[in-house]
Length: 206
Image (cartoon, rainbow, N blue to C red):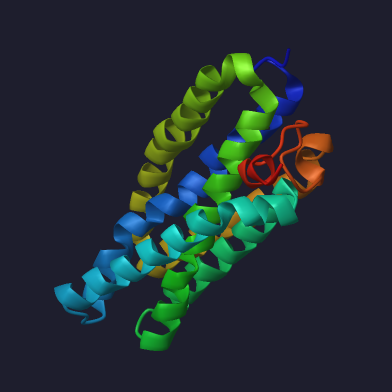
């Protein structure tokens, strides 16, 4: 039985708190930044809608991604794309084409990272502890990480909007490095579901 006190578990759990949630919370300032660059409320809403559509698209394809790529690869790719997104927004917020591409990258900053994170927790905690594992993941990521991210983003925004997005990019790169050096093993290095179970599609085929 795997328990939440294992060293492996605690190497992963700080990632969403320190990195992904930190960068996601900067999206709270996205509307303010666009307003400063003269975009209308309608246009800002459309940018948000585009990000949601991209996120839904990744969730729809999450099963295939998990079967083809390892969780470690998905996490690392998501964090690199997150860094690129924040750099694009921070440096090119006045350019329509830059914002369109950046909002499509929301598929990585939330969609693919969250899908991999939830699946990783599912694999690690086993059948008897799924509720505890997902609750812990949510508390660390959206609770503690969200509060810390909002606080740090607010301080950075007061100094410079561009600085806030640059720091978000740096946090994502830090997350990429942490995954590279600390998150490894059979549960994350191999594509598929990693616990001997058949995926829903495979079960139906049999």
